[in-house]
Image (tube, rainbow, N blue to C red):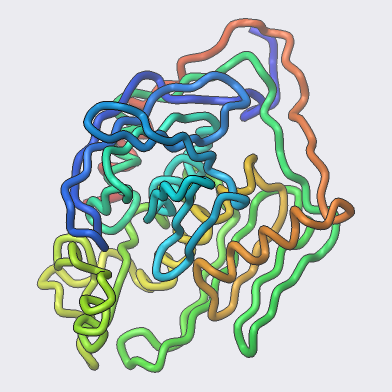
Amino acid sequence: MSKRFVGSRQTTLGREIELAGIGVHSGARVSMRLHPAEADTGYRFLVSKRGRIVAEIPGHVDHVKNLTLCTVLGDDSGVTIGTVEHLLAALRGLSIDNCYIEVDAREVPIMDGSAAAFVAAVDGVGIRELLQPRKFIKVLKPVRVQEDECWGELRPHSGFHVDVEIDFQSPVIGRQRYALEMNSGAFRNEIARARTFGFMRDVESLWKAGLALGASLDNTVALAEDRVLNPEGLRYPQEFVRHKMLDAVGDLALAGAPILGSYQSVRGGHRLNAYVLQKLLADTEAWTMVSAPRVRDSTPVDMSVGVAAVNYAADRN
């Protein structure tokens, strides 16, 4: 086999994945199937009802409809699919380029509040390389969005670097910052198991707004004023900022292709992530589409999941 650029080909799932859980906001039971897809499909959400596909929504920032507590995509007919960010983070974090996501509800299941279940499911079926070269969105100049003390910026970079800072008026969280050169190993070991979090003081108002109806200690890090309420405690040091980084990876996956650039976010969230991405794509001088070097070997590779699965299990212990 000839030598080739690692990661030069597009990828998809080795085979179909079935998952089930609840929607963190709706509280409804959700069944989801992830299907392998051909090259240049990207991420596409298939919303089903009684076994029939009623909408196909591209996983692209152009289809963002709401950014309140989660990222919601939709089409012109009013069909929406919410809480897409953790799944998209897993797909992008593991360098999966193409996937059909079939969901029988209006929300992706929250699982344990992180991307861990999605990573484990991918490990179970493997990742298949396709013949076509991978395409990247290459950032050519800085693009910044600022709202008061909150800001986000994409800058040129040869890889994908993510730097996230949060600042909460809480003794449990306070100010945290975390930065990584993002690749599948870094995502798997440092980010994937970081869970979403929320304050008990906000629960009543969220319920009145029809949100967080499915939240529990099984899928959320719950915070009192001065402590974590989950009996098992935290999974990582700085789990809170790591989860915000997970969210950012998922939101930036809505670019339509992996990004060659550096993203920095200060006191941001879903809205800021989306606005920075929208501003980048709206400026045709700020980015260009590039392809990985073409490869001479014409045989796609079924990428082994054995080592990855072992490493993931070891990291959890």
